Length: 421
Image 1 (tube, one colour):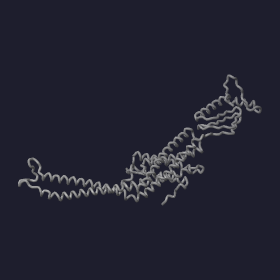
Image 2: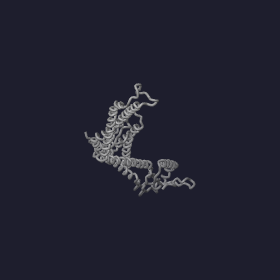
Image 3: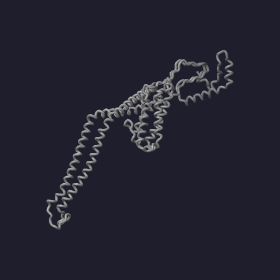
Image 4: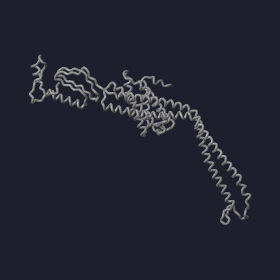
């Protein structure tokens, strides 16, 4: 059954698909009793990916947030998790052992990469999703300078990783293309060379067989033309401490046959090895074209996904580099008021047409949270220094004439209103 999802599907549907696929793969990996470092790291990466996809599902329900650029990365992420889960199932079924004791993790290959390469690919998807979410949040929420710096660092690191992955994908595509072209050129030359080597080996075996046959025919009759010294002569005796001609000739024939037998065994093994090589070149050819086409299509799809991830990073980087400014306009305050217009996240402040009444307290600018808290405490302390009765008395004397008024103090007393405007 064909997968109904495609890049034309909605972001929410693709996010759900990727989340479910990654969760199934996480459960599959977690079901194995393996403490291998690569397996642990893969499980941790899948857990982090699930968290990012879960947050994405919540954000994608907001119609005001545009996450359309994530469609292809989400589709590829979900398919990659599905494919890797199927690959694990295939390898465990082939191993024949209990599922929880699968130990052939090092043999797993996805798009010609091992488990570490697959983990790094998932990390690229996770970082891209987090960058897209961060970009969406920055458009609607205030962030501190520290958070903004961390966000920029994440964009830089993710971009570097994706560019490296893109380079690897380009190399794989080039290798596949070259491999497809060399089937009729270099592949034919290699196959012809191997066939020639096979024929040569077979000829060597034939020569050995002929020599052995010739020795077997020659040995019974070779001694017929050699005279016997005397009636008391024994075939194995020595004359004057020297071996007889018969003994030397017999031993030579024996050594020659043993040497030929050893050479024959080695040549037969060499021939079997060549046959295996010829078979590997010929039999899989019909399958390789289809497998290569499928693999090339998969890698091209991954290439497009990486380019989309890089575009997301570039857009987020541009957005993060923009100067953020808090604008205050047409702000007015009556007499004896208190007003705070500050930024605690390090952004610039633009204030226009801001007015304040008599004896008002007003703070403008940017400061840290701690400084703002200390300023608030100091203001409360100053306010409590003026007795309530004195304030009421001063207010009563000037009521209805020139405002509430303020009782003057002697010069040697603390100037309470020194900072008043």
